[in-house]
Amino acid sequence: MMTRRTASLACAAAIGGFAADNKAERKEPVRILRVPGGGLQPQAGIDERGTLHVVYYAGDAHAGDLFYVRSSDRGSTFSPPIRVNSQPGSAIAAGTIRGAQLAIGKSNGVHIAWNGSEQAEPKGPMNPDSGKPGAPMLYSRLSDTGSHFEPQRNLMHRSFGLDGGGSVAADLAGNVDVAWHGIGMGEAAATGKEGEARRQVWLARSEDGGRSFPVEEKAWSRATGVCGCCGMKILADRTGHISALYRSATESVHRDIYLLWSNDRGRTFDGQLLHKWDVNACPMSSMDAAENGKETVAAWETGGQVYWVRLDPQGGAAGKPASAPGDGRGRKHPRIAINGNGEVLLAWTEGTGWQKGGSLAWQVYDGAGQARGVKKQLPGIPAWSFAAAIAHPDNTFSIIY
Image (cartoon, rainbow, N blue to C red; front, side, top):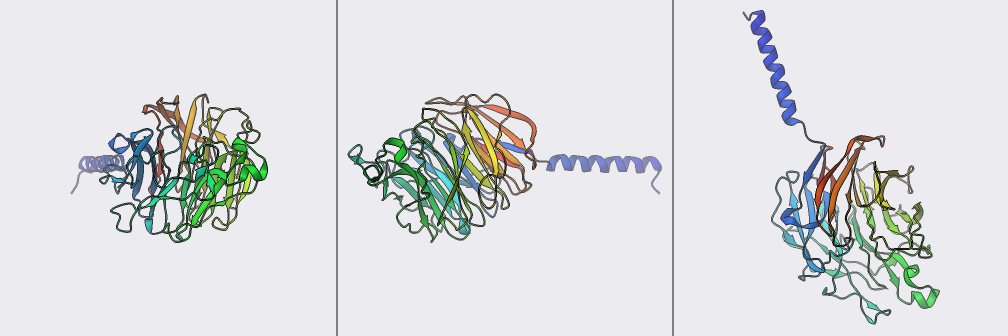
């Protein structure tokens, strides 16, 4: 028969073992990872199986290459890199907002779009302002075997003047949307407008998983202009609802964030002025968006501060934008993720600039949008780079930088 002392010791050992097991199983809410191979400008996504997909930049900032890796263990190890661009040196990192964007679509297909470098082939359409072919909006998809990327394709035919970065979205029905901003052929003569006022968001939409793309169309008819050297972001959620963010250039000084949305899988779009900013300069800013199957969130920069907001499922913002805590000077390139509990991770850079690196910062928010814990910060963002934010199926987060 077990004595009272023996029973007490056994119980204590069991409790201690249980606590140790719980401690071993407990996961950090935000895991920090470095870009494989010391690369720049990571973009990442999670597929339906929980596999992590990452694309990053390497090489000369004006004529480099894109590489793709994947991980089945939350980034502890990665597959050997596969070059995305079929022509060496046909990607660009300078400016920070012209690099690759990645989307995961039907059957976990991988789709990547990027601004072509000056060396890129095929060339973009002739730019009548310069009398030379412009930069192309390039696209490639991972082969069905997962062993290589298909030859890069230019999707610009009716528009020219690619400058700020384009974006790509994909849904579970096999639709792939590549968006960018540019100037329509003959736009200046038809409207009498000049400069950035001529720019609009364009969309090339594939209904066969990226195998073919009809010529691009204007996404929205409203004439807001687009900030020439700013990026944009397009996202398709799991129901096919599409959201897109871009920065306007109305009268050159109204560089506001606009939200576009489509409830018919990209055939038509409505829009909303989301956040105002009057500045007579091009801020070279970027945006981000993410979804968890139930909610979509979006993030952007205004006046050196970063903001985020939850979006209404039927279109538009669901509330007022929230800013990251603390001093808002010098913050750029926000990246956002949302987990299955509705918790949000917002990451951004601090102190970065032209040919200048800086620090990584981040904040976690609960399902009600309240900051959870304190803002964290780490040095080590290289020049021309930023971070990627990821929500895993177990509701933890990762940041890759």
